[in-house]
Structures are given as structure tokens and as C-alpha cells.
Amino acid sequence: IVCGRTGNRTKLHRTPAPPGLQFDTSVLIGPRTVPPLDDYSSPGSSGNGENSLPPSSILPPVTEPRHEPSSTSLLSTTAFSGELGFQLCFPASGVAKSVTFTYSLDLKKLFCQIGKLCPVEVQLDHPPPQGTILRATAVYKSPEHRGLVVRRCPHHEQTNENNDDSTPRSHLIRVGGCLQARYVEDGNMKSVVVPYEHPQPGSDGTTVLYSYMCNSSCKGGMNRRPILTIITLETPNGQLLGRQCFEVRVCACPGRDRKSEEDKLRKMNEKPEVKTAPKAKRRIKEVSDPASQEKTCKQVKHASSEEVFLLEVHGKERFAMMKKINDALTLMDLLPPADRDKYLRTIFQRTSQTRTTSIGPENREDTPCEGGEQF
Image 1 (tube, rainbow, N blue to C red):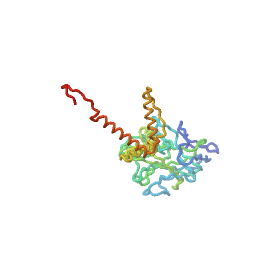
Image 2: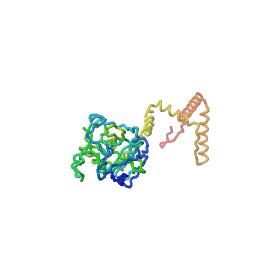
Image 3: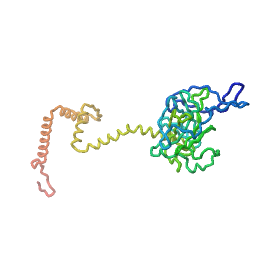
Image 4: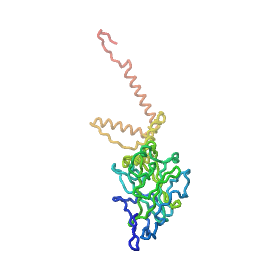
């Protein structure tokens, strides 16, 4: 914030947000809100030194007490918009391999490259008290690791980043473009604090540039353990006004990893529908005993008896033969079961007698042999 005085009026000049950023209002954490713009004057200095900096522009000392749980308690990750309607908004981005950061609304997860600035827009329904601050804290997502400190790996801590010595190298989260950022170590928690700035004219919120200085896969650091970023809105004395949380993955290709995880989530949601296929195979395997198989065949025949099929036959003689077979089967269907069995038994007996008669000794022909003898 650059302040200057002209006559009796005080002008406030704000550093504009990075050009080219367009925020997608559909990618929100919390309810949709549009914060109003409050008129306030920033401090200036005259020749006699009568004016001084008001408390609203001075960041509260780090040593002031906070009305939050102590470092021995686990930080809550539940979203809390509060009376001010605190929410976060991320700029729209795709899944191209060239993107440095991208946010997934389905996963509620931010994918970004190491050291790249990720703009996060803070939106409020009502103006907060004077001196309100924004605090960003990184915690592990798993409850079993929640009590551990999220810090950078030893390799990245020793890397020369061309920054001043005032920024602790062990802190994972950094803030870009803000000289008033403070890095706080409260017991086992490491956080970065920036003063809340009112939105610029024509904008819905104020933008904070966060960056993550270690990969999620680094050994000795996060070691592939998922992390959450908790952003809280607090008063100067530490009273909580709002809280929002989102998961973060620091990787080499954010677009690729986002697409991969969204595909996995989509397949997991489709699993209940796919499970119906193996049940049909099990039913076929269960029909193994002859009794049940015969019963099933009868049911199939009974169900298909009303169906009509067309059969193409070449030749009139074959057609007449097939017609006789069809007529006989039709008559068999019309007979009662008892008469049908009796009729089949009679036909079987006649066929047996005919075969016995045809091969009897009286029907044999005398066949002369080569020696002139006859049988």
C-alpha cells in the first residue's frame, strides 16, 4: 500500500493484482458472496509529523495471545463462513501440462508446482473489524499425522532461493508480493500471517499469492502424505471470524495429476453399477445339478412355446417331410400328457416288433456259397 497526501485530502494507491488473472466465481469454497467496499483513509506524513500510522495498518505483534486452541490441540478443518460470509475463490484453469497451478472443484484440491505463485481470492459479505488478518497454516490430512509439523525437506531447506534471511527456510507456505507478511511458529504449527486488505474498486475480493516451497513426494518432508491448507480470518486479538480449508498437492505436472485423480474418482463412483455383471455369471454356475437343469429347460421350453420361427427349405420333398414333422409335433402338443405317453409307448412297441420280425430266421434268404452248400 502506497500512501500520499495532497492538500487536505489523503489518497490511497493500491498495488494492482497480477495481470491476466480472471477468477471463476463458480470455483468457490463456502457460500457465494459479494463483499462491499468500505471507504477508509490511509495514513500520511506531514512536515510537522502530526499524523501517525493508525492501528489498522500495523500488523499485530506475533507475541500477542490468541483465542484459539493451544499447540497441543489439533486445528479444526471444518469450513466456517461466520457472520462475515468468509469464502475463497480460485481462478479458472484447465488440465494442460503447461499450467503451473490448477484447482479441482470435484476434489476440492489445489495442484501446483513448487515455488509457483497461486492466487487465492478472499471474499466477504460484510467488512471485517480494523486490523483483521489472514493466517495460512499447513497440516497433514490424515488424523494419525495431524500432530506432526509440516515442514520442508532438508534438501530444499538448504537450497539458495535468493531471498532475504528474514524468511524462515523451514516454512512450507510463502506469500508473494506482500512486505508485511509475518512467519509465525506457534509450538508445532508454522503459519504465515498477512493483513486483510479491502477489495479494490470493481473487484469482489482481495487476492493473496501463496506458494509452496517443497514437493509432496520429497523424502524427509511431506513424504507423499496429503496436506491441507487452513486459511483463517482473525481479529488482532486472535478471535476467529472464519475458516476455509482445501487440500494441496505440490507436483511437477499439476494438470496431469489433476486429470488422473479426477478419473479415479469417476471410476470409484461408477463401481456400484459395474458390480451387477458378475452376479449373472454366478447364477449360471449355480445351476449344476441335473434336476434343477431339467427344470430350467422345461421353463425355457414353456416360455418359448408361443414364439414363431421361419425355416427356409430347398426342395418340395424336403418341405413336405418337414411339414409332416411339424404337424406331428403340433398334434403331440394337443394331446394330454397321459395319452401322449401311451401313444409314444405304443409306437415304441410296434417299432421293436418290426425290427424283431425283419431279422428272424424265417425271413432269411437261402444264399448259395462257393462250395455249393446252402444254409
